[in-house]
Amino acid sequence: MHGLMMNYPLTLAQVLEHARHIHSSKRVTTLLPDQTFHSYDYTTLYERVKRLANAITQLGVIQPGDRVGTYASNTYQHLELYYALPCSGAVLHPLNVRLTAVQLARIVQEAEDKVIFVDGAFTDQFDELRKKIECEQIVHFNTSSAHPSVAYEQLISEADPIYSWDIPDENWAMGLCYTSGTQGEPRGVLYTHRSMFLHTLAVNQADVFGLTEMDIVMPLVPMFHAMAWGLPYASMFAGADMVLPGAKSVCIADLIAETGVTVAAGVPTIWAKVYPELSERKRDISTLRRLIVGGEAMPSALIEAYEKNLGVEICHAWGMTEMSPTGTFSKLRGAHQNLSDAEKWRIKAKQGQPIPGVELRLAAETSNGFTKLPWDGEVSGELQVRSPWTASRYYNIEPTTEHFTPDGWLRTGDIATVDIDGYMQIVDRAKALIRSGGESISSVALEASLLKHPSVLEAAVIGVPDEEWGERPLAVVTLSQPIRADISDTFKQHLAVEFPKFWIPDRFVVVDEIPKTSVGKSDKRAILEQFASENLRDRSSAA
Image 1 (cartoon, rainbow, N blue to C red):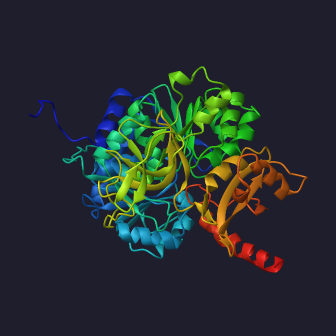
Image 2 (cartoon, rainbow, N blue to C red):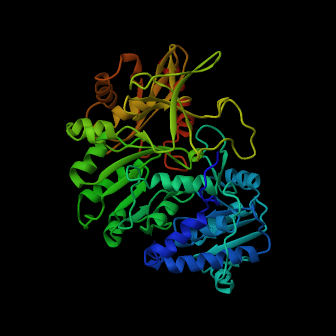
Image 3 (cartoon, rainbow, N blue to C red):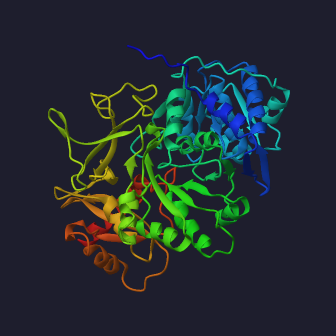
């Protein structure tokens, strides 16, 4: 028996309409390349989005379902495209500006982007890509240079301000994002209006992002990285003001102080680098109440420093491009309030509980399929997930058992534990476990321990080929302060407190900067390429 409730498509147009009618005076502020601010309210944004939707149609090359690329930073124009493209029936395709022209050319070709909107901050960079792709139209914004292309502001000014949203099917595609390619070639994930609408509702729960209309939200996570973690939609649905940092590197402390940011989001690398300038307290950052951290695990020592010294709450989030992207969120429960500070920070260092709507399971692969593993905080297994906003397959790729289970769960490629309260902790990537003499060594655990050392700023551990043991761990670190003692002895003694002897790396390398992927994670493939051959040469010469 069916119920008697209204049933109409859940689309992003409803997010925009709600923001316009209920939160019309809220503002979007963008830091421009000349370090001045551009600011307007939701009403102006709404009117420009409607004009832009008409302009997109009037280009004459975009049909419903066509993919439209954006090669841009976090700006108000990019935010307008986040709404105008999906709400007009096109598919938003944010291009990762940190990828090479060769990588992006393959992605653009596979996506068949009809039009690409280009931020003037990346014009020269985009010109390299332009030589390698076929695209019917290029639209530039934030540039004064002459280009043989359509100008963004001209499109908007000449377009009709009246536009009626018409997305009849909530399962219509709204966005296409490609994975970062840390485990192989980037793969496309095609989101729907329904999936992103439901993801927006879920992350705005009080125990998830918990955004309110009193917040001023600054996504430092790039808008090309998994839809900026859904913040462009979650912020406007909640009625929060937004601060967009643009393309230029800026003093984050100054930006927080000048705009009154209350919630900011970014990868741990950013917060590690920003902490010294925030802790100096030369500017008033008292408005900042919460940091949403994802991409990699944030060291418990850094969590402690922010919460104890700055009074800023740290909330770990975990997810994947395939999950729109949020899967878990780490906040303390009522039962944790009487724990010691050290125990609280230990819990907060975990990746957290599944957010409402997300299901997790731990599994071990057997000859007959998968065996479900217990949630006891000890047993680790392959992390598998499903939710209404998780991909069921990749774009233009037939589903395989490598990525999806026969009963429809996404195989994340992560090895994790889940405790009795449902707090998940990543132990390692399945493909990143170091196999030494038949035993598994967790690179993530070694990295977490190294980051507890007061002199270590960043750490990455990889497995390098070894003739005797198959693989041996090698640690690459950056230092926050010099160490006068022998580096290897210092770190070996530090790790020996927690790990057996065979886990401890044979070699420690100090570098000025650890190579990063396009989304700010440690690029272990690049590190391996750089140091594996050196490691073999060292062993050969020693012999």
